[in-house]
Length: 167
Length: 167
View 1 (cartoon, rainbow over the protein chains, first blue to last red):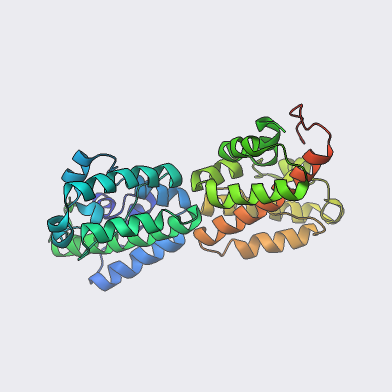
View 2 (view 1 turned 90 degrees about the horizontal axis):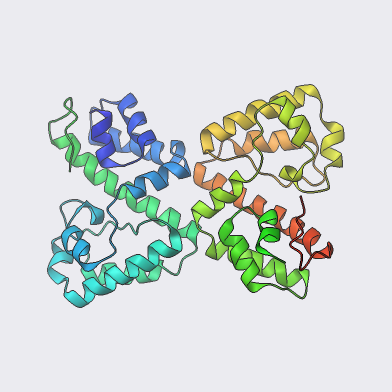
């Protein structure tokens, strides 16, 4: 459980450093508890933006095709969203992602387990009407969900002392 | 009412540009209404941090002595705080300002009209226990109060078309 491994779970260097200082964890529950404390109480707003910026930007259809099933939308559980995606929805997702980034200055983050692409698009449109401070909090909550899924992979990977990444 | 004038009220370039686009304002109320809409709905989180960073950093007693009565603590109404400040309080303010910046990554902002230096110190200590997201919102609220006081000065200065600054 090295700093590099934790940085693969959440791209805030402060988060990764603090997690490495508290490691090793004897259970996933304890790791998640530490991650929540660090993310909500120790990482400052710049650190949140740093973590958001570590996610791939999605501004065109090609990158959406490539990234749609990636950890951007939560590692490993993208079947529903992926199977329902079509070109029209991908184009709309690309357009709204650009609008979202233009308004909020950071990527749209959503933990999309079990969600269809049209559900993700609906969430993106709805969240685009929020105030920046509201969307900062939404993005932070989604990042924390993604972090927890990645921590579970990290803890189960057996790479506990080798710094193995989940990417 | 130029962009430079509005930038003197609030150091977010987005804020200043939007205000200049909506100017001139026929009353202070209308200017404040526009400022609130822009600050809370249009300026993103990076813009908030940009505005906070435009305030002087206070990390030692000398800068506190110089800046204590400045617009950092709200323009022009610092008598209560200033008259009550003593070396011990200044030292404590300097120490806690450094701790605050270390935790939150931005300056401590407070609109201190009518507050004594010990009241400001008490607020600083209390707010230092907050989570970063809470303190981001507190700082944004204080910035808006400061902005409104500066707008009042700008509107009454008669420099409406000359870009005169309030500094």
